[in-house]
Amino acid sequence: MKITDLAITPIAFADPPLLNATGVHEPLALRTVVQLHVADGVVGLGEGSGELVVLERLARVRPALVGQSVFDTSAIEAIVFAELGNDVPPIQKRSVFSIIEVACLDAQGKLLGLPVVDLLGGAVRQTVTYSGYLFYKWAGHPGQAADEWGEALDPAGLVAQAARMIDLHGFGSLKLKGGVFPPDQEIAAVRALAEAFPGIPLRIDPNGAWSVATSQYVAAELAGVLEYLEDPTLTTPAMAQVAAAASMPLATNMCVVSPETVPEAIRLGAVQIVLSDHHYWGGLRHTRELGALCATFGLGLSMHSNSHLGISLAAMTHVAAATPNLAYACDTHYPWNSGDDVITVPFEFADGALRVPAGPGLGVELDEAKLFRLHRQYVASGRTTRADTAYLRQVDPAYDPSLPRF
Ligand SMILES: O=C([O-])C(=O)C[C@H](O)[C@@H](O)C(=O)[O-]
Ligand SMILES: [Mg+2]
Image (cartoon, rainbow, N blue to C red; front, top):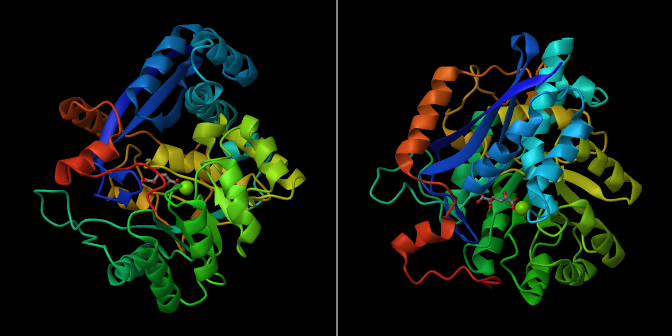
């Protein structure tokens, strides 16, 4: 079953003004959708970063994919690595390969009449649990009316946002994107969430915005309140210093990001939970291997997300269903998309979870009209990269995103 072509389509979809440690989300989030054509009219779908550099790299490997067997993902991985050459770091090669690997697995499943989860070893669970991802946010983008979520710049605003998330999607755990306001304000917000939603596991992730001393202070203040503390500070040695004093587990999607970064983290005892992400770890099979690695070393496993649409969510759900030790509710930005998607039937969470799509393949169908509309939106935007800092500086020219901020 030979690959005959790879169509690469950049898209842009509406995104609310979500604040983080480096700025604020722009009105449009960028993604790339690929359609991997194989013989007999079968098309595999993949989704990943919409950064221009990723589009260019996909285009660079495209000619070498033609003629390869869609079942030979090991050869395809080697081709991607060879075509991108030594000037592209392995982690960036993996993010290109991940988009293609998911498309290969989707096509394989369609050819075999099997869901992707079966190609990953089979489902160890039929539903995958997600957490409600809370953000500090402005009421609306500058110059625009308030969106349906409204403003969340203090504990009361976040509690209202969490209530809406839970009401709409039934989430049973919550993560707050921190690193935005001085730590005492964020501690107060977590405490307010704990009080408003007793028993619901809580996480906070300031994306390395805190110094070691600040991280240790927050860890002490939130002892007994957090399920885990995610990336309080940058670098593995600094995380190890925090971990040594913290009562709760430390989680990361910033210091353990590739096989190369695992040994130091284990040697130093820097993290207790790794947030997998197939977009960075080189696809679904390598993500499952990461699960095995974590099990070997007694590390917990959770899942990271960035702004994404339904093809990615389907892939995340298949791999999560096939990974035995993925014991934590996974992150997802999907509820922030206001229904924008490229698949015919957008996902709906029930009790904060998704059933594993029945397949074949990923079990989602591309809506060509929606893809075209979001591609037109991408072209019209003139955007080619994510620029949270520059966008915030349009409102606050003095904004300094240097980390640690606090
Ligand atoms: O867990 C994380 O680090 C993220 O979700 C990274 C994202 O880029 C998040 O900070 C965002 O969407 O602003
Ligand atoms: Mg994180």
